[in-house]
Image (cartoon, rainbow, N blue to C red):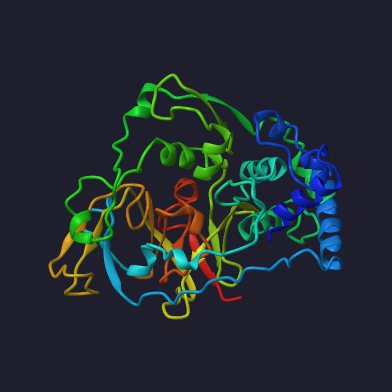
Length: 397
C-alpha cells in the first residue's frame, strides 16, 4: 500500500468529510494552487504524512508499506558513429551508449505519491529559472530535483543539504512571477513533422526523413521542460493539436547571460556544472555520465564543435551489428534521434555532450561514455560554450 493511498484510507476512516489535504495530500493541480503554493503548506503536509506513517506502523491491522528497489541494467558495449553537422568533413565516433537509447528497466522505481504536488511543481520551475535544472518538471521530489536543490544552495551560498527548507524557499521565492500560465497554441505549433511511430530497428529508422516528436503533447512538454503526464494532467480536456486552444504550461527560465569557460562533469554526482571566467556556477544540470562497462573519459578535454540536430551514422563494419542490419546507414536528425537535438563535440575522440529522446531517464539509466542531458539543457549549454575555448573536466568523485 502506498503512503498516498494509506493517507486517504485513514482520513476516510476518521471522517468521510475530511478534505484530502488534511490527510497529508496536496490540493488538486491548477494554475492557482501551483502559483500560490508555499513551503509552509508543503511542510505541513509532510508532517501529517509522517504522522500517518507512524500510525500505520503501530497498527497491526494495516498492511506494511514496502519500499521499491532501484532496477539496474548492464549497458551495451556496442559503438556507433555520429557525423557532426556544421563541421564540414568531420565525423565524430561515439560509443553507442552515448546515443542513450535507454532501457526502461533502468528507471528508478520509487513509492511516489499518486499525484504531482503543486508546491514541487513551483519549486522545480523556480530552480529551472535559477539555472539549477531539475531535468523534467514533474511535481515529484526525485533525485534530480534534489541535485538541483544542492546546486542552487551552493550557488546562493546556503547550507547544502539537497532538501526543501525555509532558507531555500525564502531565496527562491524572491522570484514572485507566475510559474504556470496560459499559452495559446499557435498555427506554427501545428507545423512540426510528427512521427507517430518510431521503430527500434535502425534499418526502419533510416527510411524516415526526420526523427521528430510523436505528437503535440511530447513537443509542448519538451518546449516547456515538462513531464508529458504533468502537461496532460493540467489540460485533461484540451485539444493539443488545434491552433487557438489555450492550455496551462510551466514558465521555465531563459538562457543565462554568461559565457562558460569551464565545465565540470561530476561522475559520482551525475551532474554537469558550467562556470564563467570568474568561477561562478552559471548552470547546473543532471546528467548521465558513462558506466562501469563504458566509462566516460578522465582528465581534461575541450569543446571542439557544436552540432545542432546531428544525424547518426550506423556502420556495423566498424562498430556493432544491430539485428539483421549489415550495411552502413545514416539515421536522420530530430529531437527523438539517438543523440537528441544537440551534439557538443569534445576534443577527446568519440566523446561529446548531447541530448536525448528520453528526458525522464537522464541520470537514471546508464550511459556508454558520453554525457547525456535533456535536449533543452544541451541546447542551453550549446549557447554558452565556445569551441576551442571552453574546457571540460571530468571529475572522478
